[in-house]
Length: 148
Image: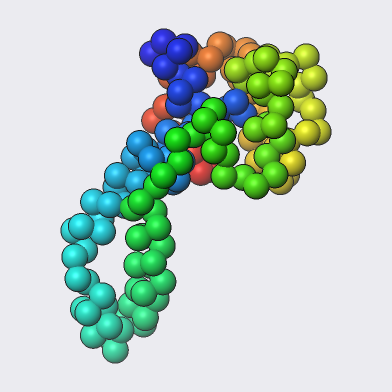
């Protein structure tokens, strides 16, 4: 895949917008909508099954979450729609004139506001992109889960 297409799918931090639960053209939203369609009016049955399958008592909460995930609307981080409320990368990458954090002379920095788990992933993703290039990084990660 060409670089110009990859940056439509990868956020400046290196996470895959295309695999995000909120991305309007993503697989997760598509699969959630398909699951919702296939479940149909299962709520009635879940209520009946809950008499002997205790897990089914949680179906209403699952159904609310599925409804949410089946209607993603985010156009992606590069479209100024980062869902992380205090993402420092969203505020920085354009000002720095870079496509990805590893291209910045301050990388790694303390401006991301990521939790420790995400910060560790952010550093690893960007170091890998710097090592092998954006195109190779994309090929290596395109079929892997985003949420690891």
